[in-house]
Image 1 (cartoon, rainbow, N blue to C red):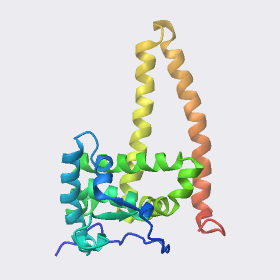
Image 2 (cartoon, one colour):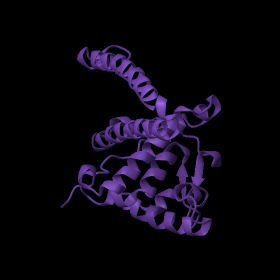
Image 3 (cartoon, rainbow, N blue to C red):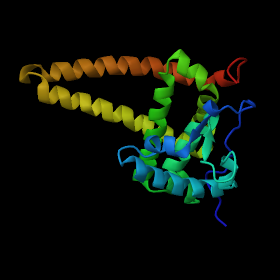
Length: 217
């Protein structure tokens, strides 16, 4: 039997607060999970994928109800993990390592994770405090899941390359003909200097195992 790449349970908060503000209904999350396709269609897709997602998590859909036939609801601290799982269900249910799956789908998945991470990093203090458990769960997925870290690292490098190529394209198309080489060379020199600095620091951190030092575990 194929092992499923989504083989980790979603982290549960220690909070025992059961107030309604600590939950999201599937219907309220649907437009965020599947944006741009209409609320009802988004909800139908969300509901269908949610039921399959429960199988992957060894859960019953009714585990996410407060009482029989009440709306399905997702705890606040599991929101982002569920959004990712439901939106990218086909990747998780494939039952094969991420690296062996369709490149286009994996690229979309990696870009989504990076986008979510950037959004969380830029959250204001109020949002960070309100959603701290949810964000902590996401960071666990982003930084700790073995299969995921390789596709994220690949996509991060591809994003940088695409940005650099776009800048050189802009220079070629927009700079005066007699200044194109000057701007391209200046860009390259500045880029090389900064790459050298960050490369040296990153290698130092890895070689000296800063991640194992007290406070960085």
